[in-house]
Image (cartoon, rainbow, N blue to C red; front, top):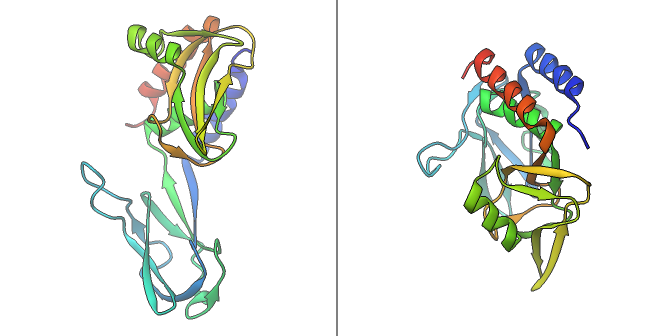
Length: 219
């Protein structure tokens, strides 16, 4: 595979025109919406502090079997599409209640570009993951953006129900290990990005694009 630089240019134009990401907030379980803690257009923040020990802004109270639960913001942004008509109504699990319009930071723009441009391996099911021993050794020795892997090599190990399954690089070619998105044995939901690989011949051009974003995009 090769990096599609036309796709990157299109994505950057799109992000410059609308530098936001919409995060829907849903109910985690069934219950009654007892109270809204925010209004349409309010600013909210996600968890803060060195260890994210300070919880995010309260959004609404969901009550089930007389047990109220405060649902809080997990990111910074503006409240929109607040469904005030649901107050005192019974709702199902995963019912959309509001959205948070989140302004993308410089690092988030870079992350969006990399996820679009690179060969990313995603979790095929909810499980825990570690790097294959040889890949871990290469990263320790050479570092990210220097360590290499080739098509067909084992790159990850998925652990699930006391079983281990090796994950190979399915694309052919020579790759640079650009980014790892997880911590060892972290439980990750299906669809989570695990590791990003850059075709060896595209690395310098991609690095120039990232440098350009850092220069042009507010930090």
